[in-house]
Length: 265
Length: 110
Image 1 (cartoon, rainbow over the protein chains, first blue to last red):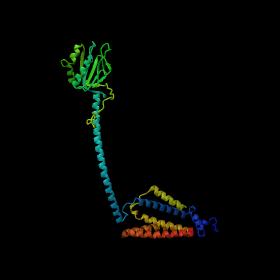
Image 2: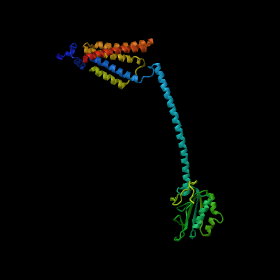
Image 3: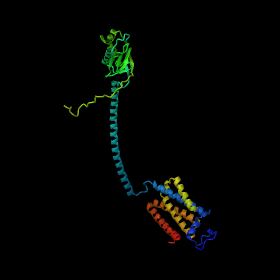
Image 4: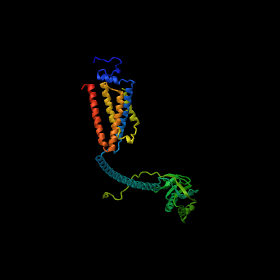
């Protein structure tokens, strides 16, 4: 285009120029009233467009026609039915799981309490409760394993639930042995040498156990004949702290109550 | 240039403020926006024709928007609001197309 506009031609828009150049010239920022007003109105337009777009995005149902509303209602009803069905299934699953966890918890509780009582029986758990403390003083060194075993059995008969001699827990497999080498007596209980005075602690019903030691021809009389003394104190809180170390059985295996195969002939 | 900047500013303001359209304006804002869009295209065409006049632009911008909204309002009162707003949109759409065609002829000579 040979008719390049001279300087200041912006004020004479009638010049027949290249339309692109005209556009560029019109777009050149000038603080004229026209530019400012056009800018303001365009700002209003952009604002209005954005606001309206957002409004349309969040528009409710009031703009829709009847058949569209019916379709939406159908869709919604169907979806609600589907979700209701899902809710029912999930509730059933939840109930099932809750019931399952309840019975599992009950089983775990029962197993725990069984483990506790087995632990007391096997001597792997410390015990405390009402009971007696029997102290056998043996100045002559005449008390042997037999007398201690008799004492223990007497206490067991009287319902002792946990027993301890000196620092040794007495359990079903506890062995009593006379200590041959000891000068002033002594009894080997489960491999540990106990020396007089023998302190026997038992948890159980205190009066029953105290009486059991006093029966005629019983422990107290036997000990007295040997020159030993038996002192019994009852208490509401006897602590059995010694533990029995359980070793895994080497030969015995649990047998199922109903053997699956016949024993070999 | 200032117009383009103003457009961008308006869009940004709308995005940032996201104002709630008052209930009584809700049926008329879309029509008014379409009318304003038509006026802007007309103004662009006038620039290319070399007959742009700021006074005309401002007056036509405002009056187009107001008249379009007024027509829809009247239609609402008469019970033919949706039909009338469709008619207004059609008319404005035709004008936008013819303006765009004129602008295209100017800029692309085609």
